[in-house]
Image (cartoon, rainbow, N blue to C red; front, side):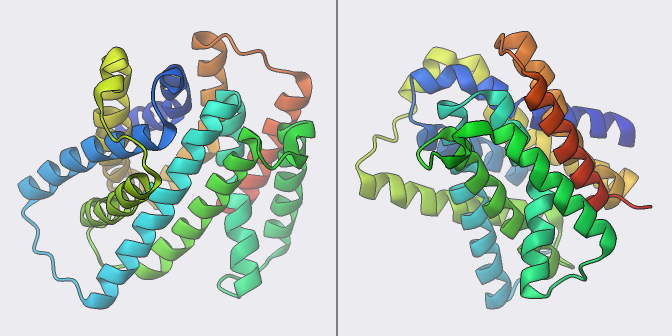
Length: 281
């Protein structure tokens, strides 16, 4: 059951960029993010109700969950969706998948984790890989590449905050409540910006949207949590190391994206760096 959950989660998470790319011609990236996480929250809420676990949260816990939701659902996932719109799905996935590099960099700067030789080597490899993956567009702040970098950095902050602040809280509860706070922030942003939140444009690509909402943002998190319970957090975390490679293969197959030798070299270096950072000897 653990291996099956792992594989299902990997396929769900790795297909996000590829499945959402065709929708970018008909719907605003942030609107898609809002509705897919709304669907995912409903799925997780049903799971939480069936689990019938007692939830006791302090004001401090709720504040942390609110910040986690803003970092993940509102900022990181919105940036990632904008990146998918403005660059290749494979490139967005590769850059986003390098978030362990930013995790160790930020943690070392603020003094939350010890900076070892292994992490230093991983950081160097990861940064070199990022440079090759981003290519010349690295200097273009308006490009999808820059949005993918922002998505990776904000997701790294989300991971660090989650490690420090959500211990002892049921992971399903963490996801549901943080999603709710993130959706609230995103909804307010869309209303203030004057962007129509109507889901009608999504009906043109209903199968893809349901896959993203119910599958990636809902069932994907359920299987992710199941995988953690069955295999442990360490082994399950390798999903994020494998995601860029699997996403690249899916982009080539379904979107007919072309992959350069430089991109592949960057993908290998970034993956190797992430493994050194997140993996064990």
